[in-house]
Each structure stands twice: as C-alpha cells, then as structure tokens.
Length: 102
Image (cartoon, rainbow, N blue to C red; front, top):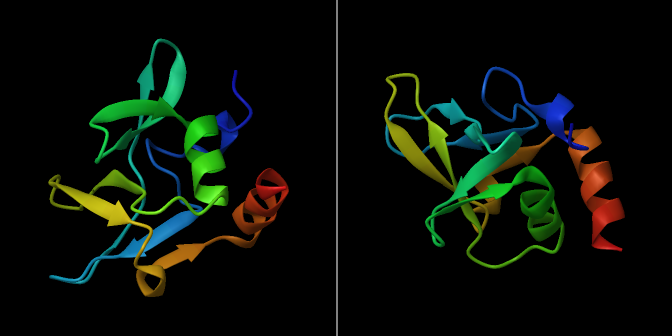
C-alpha cells in the first residue's frame, strides 16, 4: 500500500478540485490502478505515473503539469495546473505539498 492510497476516493482525488471552463463543472483527477499502484494519467507524457510521482511534481510546481479527469457525463477532460484560478487544493494537500517541496 502506497503513502497516498488513502487519498483516493471512488477513483479520484477529491483533495484537488478543478473548475472546467465550458459548461462549468468541478472535476477531480482520475486515478487508476496499474500493477497494484494507484496512478494518474499525465496528458503531456501520455503515461500513467504513480501518485507519489504526481504529488512530488505538483509540489515542485512543474510547468505544464496536466492530468486527466472525468466529467459527470463520463467524458474525459484535462486538468492543467498552470491555471491557478481554476484549481483548489485542500488544506491537508497543501501541507503535504509544502513538505514534499523541501
């Protein structure tokens, strides 16, 4: 079991909320299981990477960081962390990211 496994709820990360532009809706990063490890899909790399990798890269504020999310209608959309005005991080996630950034 990974460090961040308990953060996954119903296949998503509710500690990250993103407001979509067209047809406004709050979505959360989609999380899948690969080889027994929870992963998010990195859109620019077209690869599933473990949550640990995702959180470290998010903590470092990597430019152009983007992951996939699912809308209520089942279609996928992208969450881009460059758009700070659309992203909300929970206080507990902000704390963990601050620790990882050190």
